[in-house]
Length: 261
Image (cartoon, rainbow, N blue to C red; front, side, top):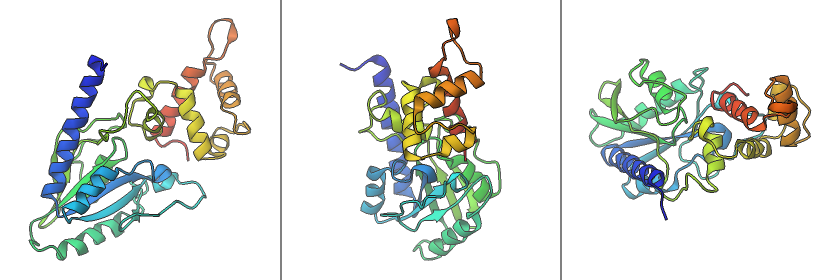
């Protein structure tokens, strides 16, 4: 039985997917924005299939590269991948040049559309601003900030099309997918169920990263991390117990804001 809240989320997912499909239909080139820390998890296969089905050019833009650890990222299956950072501007010039080269090969050169798709909070709006050298796309670290389609001029004859972030229809906002949604920042940390489990997943996929950032030796144990940070941040319940949930949510806020690298 679906709850009223579940129906609302499903309507949003349907609406956003339809907008993304429309962006793909209009576009000659499609940029799928990925999170460098979770390349595989931030890909949207159903949208990639739609791009291929319509014969459009796909570029995988791997954003937040400044937050990468020393481990080599998995590039398997990526199409024309380019690593960028909207924070340091690394890779932006290369991406802009790649778009212009591919645009020059489009049949209707002179009015080329470049669609931008991806999960919420992967940095789409920030990337649009940096690419176009303007503040045309409002930016926020709050998931789902972009509410409608935007058209932004990249260069003469080249328009960028931005749609709200996509949550695939087959993903459950209240089930196992919540871990991925928490890691990617799709859901606000305040609304993530079991935030300690999400922090644990981040620790598994990024060994020693949180340990190094917070200067805590936790041996891969999320309970030790939350215990030590909870005391350090004075996040205590009555009788001096650690508020592990509150502590985990603070970690997720800093993670989503890109403060942990």
